[in-house]
Image (cartoon, rainbow, N blue to C red; front, side):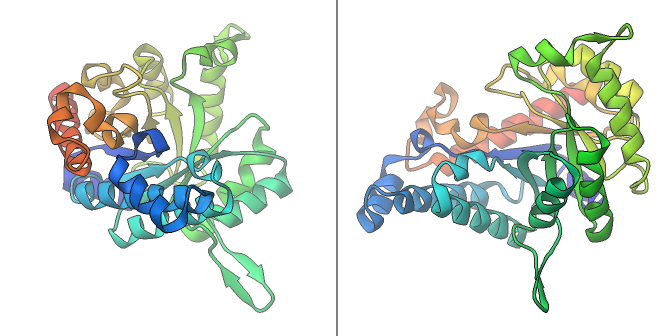
Amino acid sequence: MIEKLIQKIKKTEAPIVAGLDPMLAYIPQPILKSAFDEYGETLEGAAQAVWQFNKGIIDAVCDLIPAVKPQIAMYEQFGIPGLEAYKRTVDYCKEKDLVVIGDIKRGDIGSTSAAYAAGHLGRVQVGSRSYAPFDEDFATVNPYLGTDGIKPFVDVCREYDKGLFILVKTSNPSSGEFQDRLVDGRPLYEWVGEKVDGWGRDHMGSQYSYIGAVVGATYPEMGKRLRALMPRTFFLVPGYGAQGARGSDLASFFNEDGLGAIVNSSRGIIAAYKQEAYAAFGEDGYAQASRKAVEDMAADIRQALG
């Protein structure tokens, strides 16, 4: 799957992943009204609004970007109807030939990780039949439990040609409370990065490993250090846009071949119409505002990478 991601990045010339992290506050009133008229102000109504909102954005940007990253928590908050909207979103994105990164941040003891891996990346056996329940292409994983929690995911990735992005240095302000702590004179995120690099050697593509790392754009100097430590690891880089990072912060996350990273923007894309720069599109033009935001982001990154 890493090969497909790289091919699509080259084709679009846009190392961008759109974070499909819908909140009801982002959804234009006409979409909410239509969903509530049909289902009432219920969990089903909220899930329908989320799905319709997502579909409009996907249709508007699918030819510009290689990948999407739905954040499962934004769907889980609406219970079973929300998970149905998540699955519907994943399936629709794959119909559009987009690479789907399931932002699920799972990671537990071995048997539990095996179940998570089967449900999101692999297949589950039910009697004489097997099913791919969510069937994302990549998943985000928390490495806190060590190899016991990661190996089941790697095994499933190897079997089904899937990939991972493992949390190494995250973009949130308090990430340093643990990740920057010194262990034997070095920050913990470096130790984690080296471990991820080691796990990745067991599942390599032609240039890059199927086992990637999450490295926040809000910490470019740390990204530069990790890039040197992990030359064949693909980075998923959150933090662009709403969290403050810009194209000028990103060069150190990429290798000299212009590859090695894909940059996520969530609110900056899906809620673009709420920003002053794109307000002229209005609620009815929310999807076209998202498209323009993607075009602007791609230009910003291209300029930064030269």
